[in-house]
Length: 354
Image (cartoon, rainbow, N blue to C red; front, side, top):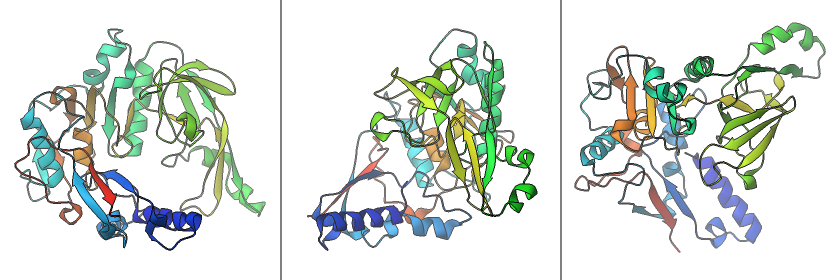
């Protein structure tokens, strides 16, 4: 979800372009979203900071008229109980204990290996489209570990690409204080790893906006079909461009958040994506989803997002050592739901009054 600052910046941009003081340059604005989903990420921010960053707390919000969609497109079939369950999770209406935890439904609980449960048909050669399945985790480190484990189970030889790391600084002494080995161990969220391990058929996620017009933007999932020294040959794994061939080059990636220096890493701007974080999965749909909750969720809407990524209840499995799942909901950011409507909506739509 975009923060309110993005909406307000766009308002100022349109005013500058149209040379008028009218809101959004007197243009009609159409927004789509769901406040049950994950709120804008505020680094080191708590509940108050995340709520304050929501567009509902923007001074522009009262200029919008809100409409609620009625048909759930993601969840197919006539499973009204499952639709209602997801909606209750998002609204915080499912009963929880004093720690905001609830029992994982017995038919969703994975008692064996979650990797085998989700990926076995593909690893055994019974199916070929790995883009239709994924494992979701709350934390970035868990998604990397699971993705590398699945890669080891795949047939074929592994190609390893190691990055060239350096520090962008005006003081040469910083280079002496920050050895290359230290830089190699750093893998910030949203940053390519020092050691990128790839096999033909691997699913990867693009981490940078390379060509928005061609669909090569942050979060795009690709399937690797060719491994070269300077480029990766990939095809789009999903969406309207599925199957289209593209080349991904090595580029310089920069990171300086919460660091006293700027890390420069020359590497392919991708990560393995057999498993991904719940936040990154927003907006995507899968046939089968495994949800790893051995480390519980920690933010508003994460459980709702994870459960609603699959098209049906049969496509969801949950791994939890405790047999419990944590649900965090901030009621102050939610609109009042229609309790009588069984056809829940993934997004709600807004348009500006004119």
